[in-house]
Length: 179
Image (cartoon, rainbow, N blue to C red; front, top):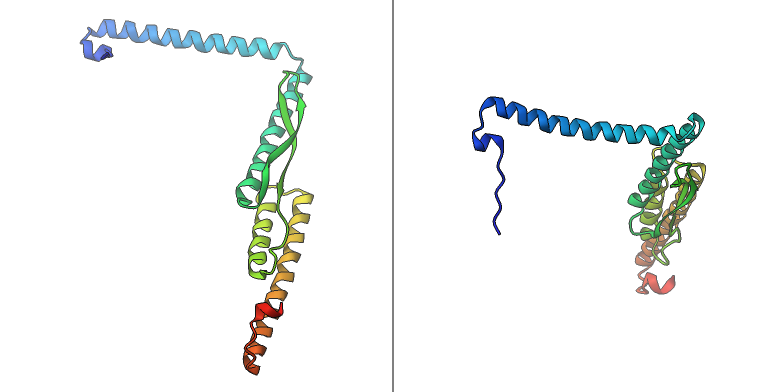
C-alpha cells in the first residue's frame, strides 16, 4: 500500500490558510507543552521542598556513580569480571538510584610472561584512574598495579640477563627450560 503525505506547501494553500494551519499546529504543541509542565508541577508539588531537594541530590549522585563505573568498564575491557554492580537507594518517587558501585576486574599476573603482566598492570592502572574523580580504593588499586608492573619489569630484566649470559657462555639450553 502506497502512502503520500501532503504539506501546506504541496497543496498551494492561500497564505491566510497557511497561517491558520501553522497557528493551529503551534497551539496544539503549546497545549501539549503546557500539559506536560502542569503534570511536572503537580508531581513536584506532591513532594515537600526537602524531599525534592533529596530527590535531586539522589539523581545527581546516580549520574555520577554510573559515569564513574562506566569509565572503569571502558578502560578495563578484556579484564572485567562481569559488569558493574550498584548499591541503590529508593527515592521519594519510588525509583532506585545508584549511590555506590563497583566493577570487578582480574588483577592477577600472567603466569610465566612478565611482558604480558606489564601490559596488564598498565591496563589495570588506566582502568583504576579512568574516572574523573578516582576514589581512595581506585588509587590503591592503581598503586598495587604499579607495584605489580615494577615486579614484572625486574623479572623481565632478570630473564633477559640470564638469556644473555647463556648466549655468552655458549649454553644451548633454552631459557624456558630453566624457568
